[in-house]
Every structure is written in structure tokens, then in C-alpha cells.
Length: 75
Image 1 (cartoon, rainbow, N blue to C red):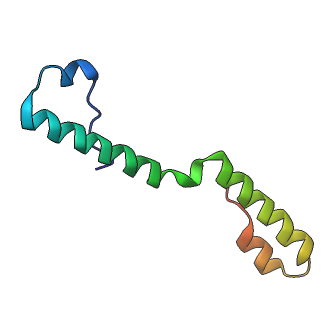
Image 2: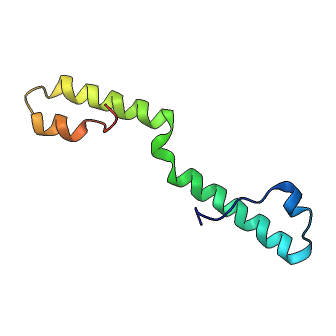
């Protein structure tokens, strides 16, 4: 589903009936799948993750294994 091509509006204008309805519904499903698959790249998630990492470092300074585990891969 994630690799399905996105149809352009002008392409949809060239199809009618059940095929058009089918393509539009699959495009909507694709959009939902993309949103669900990309949650970890949203700024809200990365901010929460970084805050949790900082809290782990301050609350458990002697637990190096936990700190390494909590460290975001982008830091």
C-alpha cells in the first residue's frame, strides 16, 4: 500500500464510475497508511523522545545501560 502511486487530480478526471470510486478509496487508505507509518518522524514524537532521554539521564545517572537504551538514534 505504501508503494502505490498517488494519482493526480487530472488523472482521476479521466476515469469514471466504480473504478474512480475504487481508486479514490485506495488513495485514502494509502494516505492513512503513510500517516501511521511515519509517526516516528513527526516533531511531536521526537520532542517527547528527547525529553524522555534527558529525564532518564538526570534521574538515573549511574545506569549507563538504561541511558544508552533511551538515547535517540539521531543524537
